[in-house]
Length: 221
Ligand code: CTP
Ligand code: MG
Image (cartoon, rainbow, N blue to C red; front, side, top):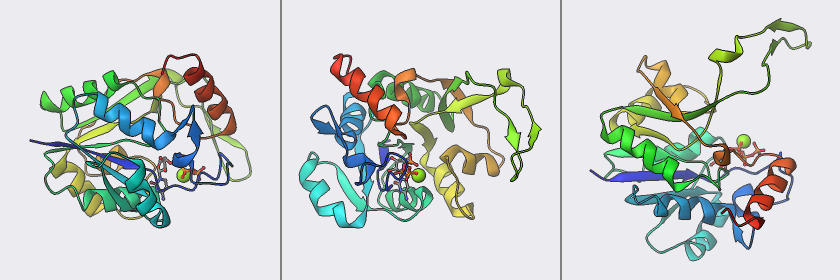
């Protein structure tokens, strides 16, 4: 059945500080959003792409992207935006959720996530080991713990799911989640991690944008 990719791109990009929604920031002559969509189409593993953008940008995004891409309005939290995308993905057997902000994600990673779904996994996420030691702290900044680093992973997208499971996770979701797999975990369902890619990093801060622009300049992307 069809693989539908949902691309949340409705965030405001507050941490990037570029005075426009992040997905529309220039990255080597095109937007982050266009690069993210191109990567999905180039993977050869995705049948349909649904992009979720701020309401006032729906019309302009339709002219920016290829005609076969569906564009809908998002909401105030990422969870609301993904939900809006899911609502127009009725035909999906598998759903990928892929941040526009991971604009340089290699198409080969996207294809690997889909291959795992087609092998029978119900939920698949790309992850990388963390390099910093991570600590938990309380509201006053006192350290409350040091999780064992070897067990920690930084999570990327695309995250892949059977459509049935992701719909069930969103139906049960109360409040917000920073990651779609987190909602699936709350159902008690098994989530499979695979090895991610350094270039699938999320462009979040000005420093991330410097790195992304340098990679594009270098011609690796
Ligand atoms: N996103 C979305 N709808 C929201 C919030 C986020 O579609 N209401 C999307 C963003 O556009 C981005 C992805 O979710 O592609 C990851 O979110 P994040 O990196 O936090 O982006 P922003 O929310 O735009 O950034 P910030 O939190 O700094 O404002
Ligand atoms: Mg955000």
